[in-house]
Image (cartoon, rainbow, N blue to C red; front, side):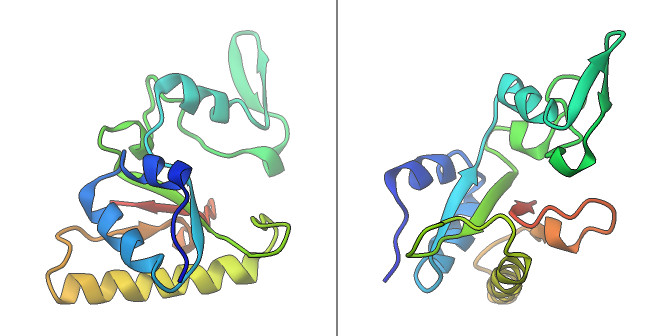
Length: 149
């Protein structure tokens, strides 16, 4: 049976209880790893800079393929910036290298659909109180690892 590493557990512990409940259930049958839970504004801004360059004091997208987030963590906060975090980034984890496969969109979609089923079940039976949405369902910026309240 899969289980979270110490690193994944410590990141998950920074998240809202409903997110913790969902992913403690998911890990029982689907191996996965927690990439991010709570982020400080500094950590958020570091991710915001990916795919961007500063031009005349303004951060502009220069490489859209590298953009990770549109939230800078200061005047535009992410749900990751709340404490406890209202968002968590989770990826399927494979037993053979590479363990995390950022270009395996079909694997991320299959994992995402499984997690959505778990969420639906937990809402139906009152295990969690909040609806949790998946970044893989977004229209303009697909964020397959992202789950948020």
